[in-house]
Image (cartoon, rainbow, N blue to C red; front, side):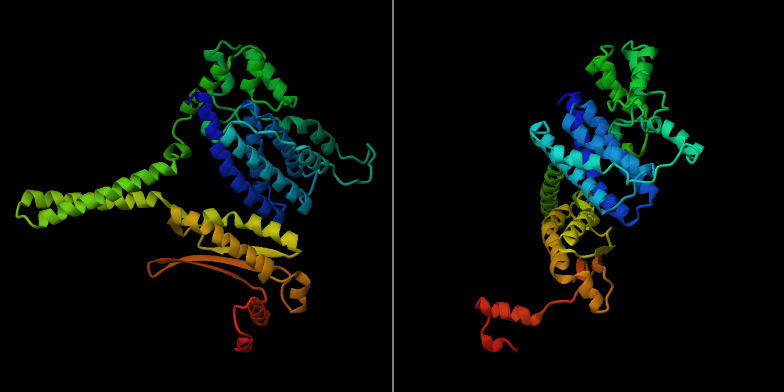
Length: 421
């Protein structure tokens, strides 16, 4: 695998994680549209994906995220107010990005797509509602000044569009422009020209602009990215690594074989009076037990990893059913083995969908029954008696026992005589 492939792989992994967070953040922002911190985080994430996709020549991905970033920019600047329609469009953009990333991972490209309808939808939503026109005398001076500098404020730094594993603050001495001036003979004037193009609205990464200008080679840019990464020194990302699950599975199998060999040695040591062998076997027993426990911990994941997808699922389903549902969670940090997490993901999703679809009533029905129009779906996970318990409950009307009995009789599952039982 060459350096470019490494960057694409890093981009795919990080973008996948960011998209899962975007789902959660957009649902949270819909409920708290004035939360500037979450809005800024969403904007930065889309900006990063857009910029990196341009650098890696994923043009369709860049086009979709570019128009999404523009819409988010207007929300960030207070020119638009978030509503259900805008949230749905942004979530549709996230879905489209997720599909393109899956295609890039599987086939190396975005595939043949037509996202013109989505792009048109996101573009049309950028238009602010009609407001009474103001004369020049009525317009505050600060407004005019702000409109003049807004395009500059939205321009990206030369490294802001890269994955976090290879990105760096713009004021760093190891920015892409500085490195290329040192290693590839790029002049300060050429770097300034590329920076000016970015300020004028060019969405591409500085390295890509310099390559197009013919003053830097793609290999120089890739090498500069890796040098930039090394120059960052120790950071939060340096203390963690990503591992393929198959490697953990292989390690788990080897530990299992080691446990079996340990047990055989312990049986043999217990049948002999050789003190050296007994002491060595006890030491082996201790080390093997600690190794087994450590490997098990590497496979543990918080159940919140799959719960985090449920707010989006509930929102989409509730909108389709004409219902109002809020999701509350307790015990998201409860850990399970990754294999179990994957095994229970689909059954839990099915239970959540059933609660929204069949358990919680429509708002008018709930109001007639004296309930809050907004239903409540509660997820809880906790340890008890050496086991992990998972509870999913809602405050809906519950099961209609008579209807269930009638359906069971119709299907021949029970006899009519048991109807009243």
